[in-house]
Image (spheres, helix red, strand yellow):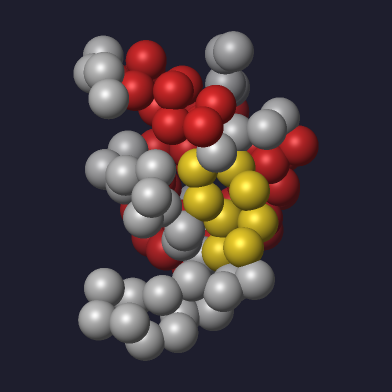
Length: 89
């Protein structure tokens, strides 16, 4: 699957996330991808419709603190990310 435009740029926010710890919110995607929030929302929801991301009602920080809703990689998303970066799991 080839990503273009804002979706490709937003998807880079998950480059260093593992599949098990990949839930991040729009604000984090915005900072990592260098996009404004309106573009991030559109791009991330498009990636979810393509089956690369999944919405989670709650995420957690590394120390176990609730951190709000976000999107995380699906298996297909992790595979695409690995293929784009040239690494294997």
